[in-house]
Length: 247
Image (tube, rainbow, N blue to C red; front, top):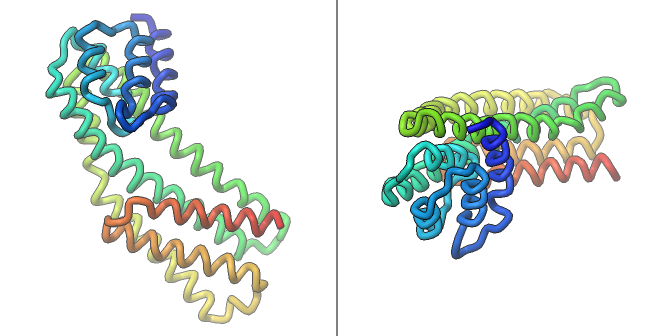
């Protein structure tokens, strides 16, 4: 197979959820990518169609690669892979990577807005959300493309490799990130208690207070690992910050 087919199928996966439905889930998008890969057979298309394909979108590259690697694939195994990487992918991308990058963005914005002496430099920190977009897509899309290629070449061993890569850092990174974010939070609170808050404007205090509350909620949610949508709080905080800056 020429590399152009892999690239085309990877691009097709970017539109995986454009035809998402409650009944078929991601089936149409995945079938389109499979046909683009030119590795489809009636048996493979039937398996995908009847399984109501649904998994984490950034793990679909691996599943597509596995479909291309094997001439025939058992339906039960294919469904099990969907469930496995749906759970692992959601845990890693939605509950770990996204909150970490969003919280880092908020900390950069908050520190720049409060501690930069030259007001002209503050506007540079407004580009911090771009850092989140770039880093998140760099990680997620590289996983999608890399394991599409590895799945095509190595088959089952690629699935084991991705499962180990997603599972190993979870607990350790949760604890490290929550610890570091907690330190940042304590430092900022101590600065406010020491009289630093008298040196900044009331609007800055309001924005800082909003961010501190959001950070506190996210830290506790990461420690308890019960809140699946904590990162949306940070997105709301970023929007509030930008609205205040534009008014």
